[in-house]
Amino acid sequence: MASAPPVPPVTEIDLTPFAEIVDNARTDHEQALTTGLVATSNEGQPDVALKGSLMVWDKDHLAWWERAKRETLAALAVNPRVAIFVRNPTRDRRTLRFYGEARVVGEPQLTQRIWDRVLQVEKDTDKERQGVAVLVRVDRVRAGPLEIQRRESPGTS
Image (cartoon, rainbow, N blue to C red; front, side, top):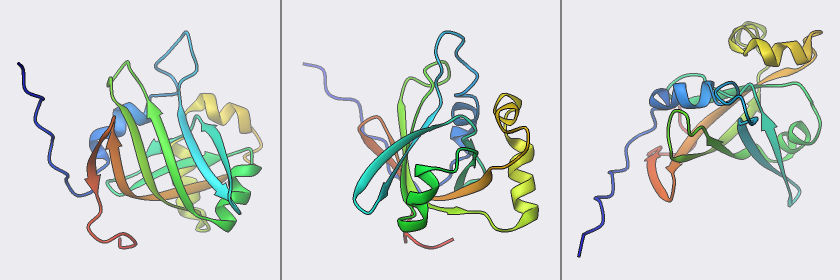
Protein backbone atom coordinates (compact mmCIF):
# COMPACT_ATOMS: atom_id res chain seq x y z
CA MET A 1 0.00 0.00 0.00
CA ALA A 2 1.48 3.34 -1.07
CA SER A 3 1.77 6.00 1.57
CA ALA A 4 0.42 9.50 1.05
CA PRO A 5 2.91 12.10 -0.16
CA PRO A 6 4.40 14.21 2.62
CA VAL A 7 2.51 17.35 3.55
CA PRO A 8 4.62 20.43 2.77
CA PRO A 9 5.49 22.60 5.76
CA VAL A 10 3.57 25.82 6.30
CA THR A 11 5.85 28.77 5.62
CA GLU A 12 5.61 32.51 6.18
CA ILE A 13 3.89 34.62 3.54
CA ASP A 14 5.86 35.12 0.34
CA LEU A 15 3.60 35.52 -2.69
CA THR A 16 6.40 35.98 -5.22
CA PRO A 17 6.46 32.27 -6.23
CA PHE A 18 2.82 32.67 -7.35
CA ALA A 19 3.38 35.76 -9.54
CA GLU A 20 3.52 33.93 -12.88
CA ILE A 21 0.39 31.93 -12.04
CA VAL A 22 -1.69 34.87 -10.80
CA ASP A 23 -0.44 37.62 -13.11
CA ASN A 24 -1.07 35.56 -16.25
CA ALA A 25 -4.34 33.83 -15.32
CA ARG A 26 -6.32 36.32 -17.43
CA THR A 27 -4.33 35.78 -20.62
CA ASP A 28 -3.03 32.18 -20.51
CA HIS A 29 -6.16 30.54 -21.92
CA GLU A 30 -7.49 31.17 -25.41
CA GLN A 31 -10.51 28.91 -25.01
CA ALA A 32 -11.86 30.16 -21.70
CA LEU A 33 -11.65 33.25 -19.59
CA THR A 34 -9.72 32.24 -16.49
CA THR A 35 -8.91 34.86 -13.94
CA GLY A 36 -9.01 35.59 -10.23
CA LEU A 37 -12.28 35.30 -8.38
CA VAL A 38 -12.71 37.58 -5.34
CA ALA A 39 -15.21 36.71 -2.61
CA THR A 40 -16.50 39.43 -0.30
CA SER A 41 -19.28 39.78 2.26
CA ASN A 42 -21.46 42.83 2.78
CA GLU A 43 -23.50 42.65 5.98
CA GLY A 44 -23.60 38.88 5.78
CA GLN A 45 -24.46 38.72 2.07
CA PRO A 46 -21.70 36.95 0.10
CA ASP A 47 -20.65 38.02 -3.38
CA VAL A 48 -18.06 36.83 -5.90
CA ALA A 49 -16.56 38.76 -8.80
CA LEU A 50 -14.03 38.08 -11.55
CA LYS A 51 -10.94 40.30 -11.42
CA GLY A 52 -8.92 40.06 -14.61
CA SER A 53 -6.38 42.57 -13.35
CA LEU A 54 -5.44 40.53 -10.28
CA MET A 55 -1.68 40.49 -9.69
CA VAL A 56 0.93 39.61 -7.11
CA TRP A 57 2.04 43.06 -5.98
CA ASP A 58 4.88 42.06 -3.67
CA LYS A 59 5.72 39.29 -1.21
CA ASP A 60 2.86 40.31 1.13
CA HIS A 61 0.18 41.72 -1.18
CA LEU A 62 -2.08 41.03 -4.11
CA ALA A 63 -3.60 43.93 -6.04
CA TRP A 64 -6.26 44.56 -8.68
CA TRP A 65 -7.86 47.42 -10.57
CA GLU A 66 -11.48 47.73 -9.45
CA ARG A 67 -13.18 49.13 -12.54
CA ALA A 68 -16.77 48.05 -11.90
CA LYS A 69 -17.02 49.81 -8.51
CA ARG A 70 -20.23 48.00 -7.57
CA GLU A 71 -20.81 45.10 -5.14
CA THR A 72 -17.15 44.35 -4.43
CA LEU A 73 -16.31 47.95 -3.59
CA ALA A 74 -19.42 48.32 -1.42
CA ALA A 75 -18.55 45.13 0.46
CA LEU A 76 -14.97 46.23 1.09
CA ALA A 77 -16.25 49.40 2.75
CA VAL A 78 -18.19 47.26 5.25
CA ASN A 79 -15.91 44.22 5.60
CA PRO A 80 -12.36 44.30 4.20
CA ARG A 81 -11.82 40.52 4.61
CA VAL A 82 -11.60 38.73 1.25
CA ALA A 83 -10.95 35.30 -0.17
CA ILE A 84 -9.38 35.09 -3.63
CA PHE A 85 -9.51 31.98 -5.81
CA VAL A 86 -7.05 31.53 -8.70
CA ARG A 87 -6.78 28.57 -11.03
CA ASN A 88 -4.34 28.69 -13.92
CA PRO A 89 -3.73 25.10 -15.07
CA THR A 90 -1.35 26.30 -17.78
CA ARG A 91 1.19 27.19 -15.08
CA ASP A 92 0.15 25.14 -12.03
CA ARG A 93 -2.39 22.36 -11.56
CA ARG A 94 -3.22 23.46 -8.04
CA THR A 95 -6.10 25.74 -7.15
CA LEU A 96 -4.75 28.65 -5.10
CA ARG A 97 -6.74 30.41 -2.42
CA PHE A 98 -5.55 33.61 -0.77
CA TYR A 99 -7.14 35.09 2.36
CA GLY A 100 -6.54 38.58 3.64
CA GLU A 101 -7.65 42.13 4.16
CA ALA A 102 -8.25 44.53 1.27
CA ARG A 103 -8.17 48.30 1.10
CA VAL A 104 -8.83 50.82 -1.61
CA VAL A 105 -5.58 52.65 -2.29
CA GLY A 106 -5.76 56.36 -1.53
CA GLU A 107 -2.20 57.33 -2.38
CA PRO A 108 -2.01 58.67 -5.98
CA GLN A 109 1.53 57.38 -6.60
CA LEU A 110 0.68 53.83 -5.50
CA THR A 111 -2.55 53.94 -7.51
CA GLN A 112 -0.52 54.90 -10.59
CA ARG A 113 2.03 52.14 -9.99
CA ILE A 114 -0.74 49.53 -9.75
CA TRP A 115 -2.44 50.93 -12.90
CA ASP A 116 0.89 50.73 -14.73
CA ARG A 117 1.03 46.97 -14.08
CA VAL A 118 -2.57 46.23 -15.14
CA LEU A 119 -2.74 44.12 -18.29
CA GLN A 120 -3.57 46.11 -21.42
CA VAL A 121 -6.64 43.97 -22.12
CA GLU A 122 -8.02 45.12 -18.74
CA LYS A 123 -6.97 48.76 -19.23
CA ASP A 124 -8.92 48.73 -22.49
CA THR A 125 -12.12 48.10 -20.51
CA ASP A 126 -11.53 51.27 -18.43
CA LYS A 127 -10.25 53.70 -21.05
CA GLU A 128 -11.29 56.71 -18.94
CA ARG A 129 -9.51 55.23 -15.90
CA GLN A 130 -12.52 55.55 -13.64
CA GLY A 131 -11.59 52.59 -11.44
CA VAL A 132 -9.60 52.42 -8.22
CA ALA A 133 -6.64 50.35 -7.09
CA VAL A 134 -7.18 47.72 -4.40
CA LEU A 135 -4.39 46.21 -2.32
CA VAL A 136 -4.80 42.99 -0.29
CA ARG A 137 -2.49 42.06 2.57
CA VAL A 138 -2.52 38.26 2.45
CA ASP A 139 -2.55 36.35 5.74
CA ARG A 140 -3.02 32.79 4.50
CA VAL A 141 -2.51 30.78 1.30
CA ARG A 142 -3.95 27.39 0.41
CA ALA A 143 -2.92 25.20 -2.52
CA GLY A 144 -5.64 22.66 -3.14
CA PRO A 145 -6.67 21.32 0.27
CA LEU A 146 -3.41 22.24 2.01
CA GLU A 147 -2.54 25.41 3.86
CA ILE A 148 0.95 26.26 2.59
CA GLN A 149 1.59 29.78 3.90
CA ARG A 150 0.40 31.71 6.93
CA ARG A 151 1.32 35.03 8.44
CA GLU A 152 2.60 34.49 11.98
CA SER A 153 0.64 37.43 13.36
CA PRO A 154 -2.35 38.43 11.19
CA GLY A 155 -2.68 42.17 10.99
CA THR A 156 1.05 42.90 10.85
CA SER A 157 3.07 44.24 7.92
